[in-house]
Amino acid sequence: MKRAWNHEGIVEKFKANRNDEQAGPMEAYMKNHFPFLGIKSPLRKSLMREQFLEYELPEPESLFSEAWKLYDLPEREYQYAAIGLIDKMKKHLTTEDFPVLRQFIETKSWWDSVDSIAPTFVGLLAKLDRNYGEKIMLEWSNADNMWTNRSAILHQLKFKNQTDKDLLFRIVQQHADSNEFFIQKAIGWALREYAKTNPEAVREFVGESTLKPLSRREAMKHIG
Image (tube, rainbow, N blue to C red):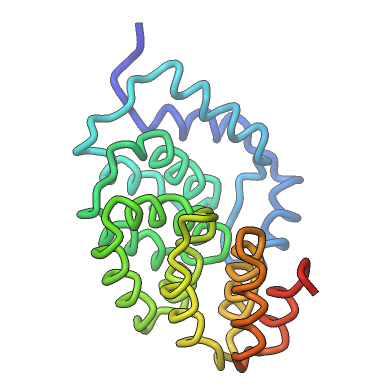
């Protein structure tokens, strides 16, 4: 019989598998922005599966408070665990959760966490109500936080033929002259991904737009 959810189960599992030798290179890879326990992705995911087998999931109304208990811990693996918990319960997400997802995006921000949240959870919410999702994504695109901007650019990354290309191109245009590497890279990535579905639209858009060289190169990578 499963036990009631307790995030300490994850903490105990992670601490028991700490590997200081691996932690150093992992921290260096992330530009030393965060401390690491030294638990690589396959083992971390295995430990999360153990947690889900041993413990009941939290009640939906407690999801984010439980996720924050993990996200607030210093080592980076706990942020990944929090995102993993949200992913496990993503069917419970609603459009009312845009603000809390933005909090996660703007807290302990780096590409690894943001890119796990934006194309999955944010994209999911945007699909639930396309008109409302567009309104929120345009707000995020105009936000002062670069990672929130990146999330708006990337939220349709997995939409394929459901992509709202007018919205994609509008948001990209808003940031086309950005000198920020992570914005230029996101633009290229979003356009390159959509080009798999609609190469002609991307080719035409890139041809008519003044994009930074990095964005242009990434966008046209597979369509010439």
